[in-house]
Image 1 (cartoon, rainbow, N blue to C red):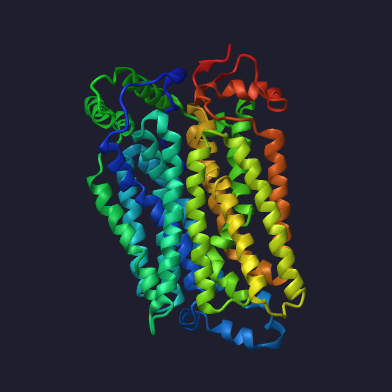
Image 2: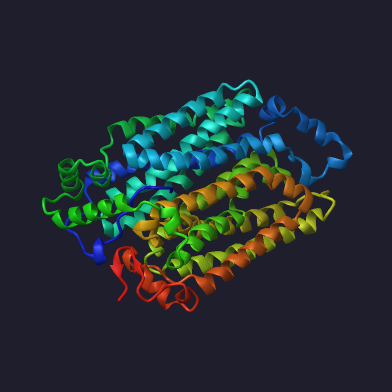
Length: 511
């Protein structure tokens, strides 16, 4: 997430610190993870709501007129409407802008203030959406939700990383992804329930977004700030006492000094955006840009945003479409737990490659099944058996993403950027992610209408390209302290050309 000052795992030079996982840390991190629930709930809720007939007839009546016209009476073009897509995508433009503002707020006023602001904005947006009477109110509400997501996505992972002991910092980072997938699942379940309400089911779905927002607002009000944040604002004694509390030991001198040194060094960094353009930081710049781009171009948010709409487009009934979205949501959550177990055992590179191959095969199969049944005209019906196979392959695809590109898309950029470029690197990561999330949300239904089943081949092609990219250009970063990342790049066949022998990466001499 943009901004914030992470401290490398294990401290300076990979040092082990005293202390362990305390109940205090577990409770504070559980509360902070509500930021992930906000993002996940919104990812899941919009697709279900946009498949509800009452919602569509109230705000997008032109869709009904469009669907009765013969030239649009195809499976592929049932929901092709720019305003409908704007309802989904507008949030992510707001999140993009808000993430840059949030980075300043987080550094100047603390992580908990940023989380509180995000929760309050999300709460306001949820209430506006629940009581909306026209499209304008819907979009305003979505923009405020985007502000909430921008603040929460920026501050929550920073808070988790700084509160957690170094030995479980990577796992807690992925726990944020677990919270996101859990929010998606909860949203899918709520959509399934509210779709059977006689009236205003969509209002309940949108309004219940206020629940995690309220929890985050209340929780962040009582949460303590991190020692790192206190040090950034000159509260040295308070920071040391807080570190003792979160680590459960009085002997925190080594870790406290390392955090203090990192904060002091961070204050001296005047031009992170200029620094990141230097040759020795070229690998970090490339991966902070390419990984979030590829993460979105896998097509995963087609499933996350529009799963019910997609299933309904393919001929699933209303309940069947929503239940299929619930099934993919369950798979998403369970597969994310796989990454918790495997990321530090098998490494980042293995998961990237395995997940890419799995997603490529599934996209080809889904596109082929749809092409065989609907062709280029978009007319046809799915047999129950074919529908079941499509759902199975989509679930396998979601699983492949959930234990690879999903969590690693956030983890890897955060662990390859040394201190002097970290604010710029994280800002690039989140802004590229949100920008392409917006594009996918805004244009997917139009792309489906024009590219038809070939759209799934397009995403498969992009998955193939990104998997080849990882195979040739990404070295393993498992267990490598951030300050030693320069050694990894220097040993790589391609990146060694950009790393000078006397480069200082993250504060340590490479010699």
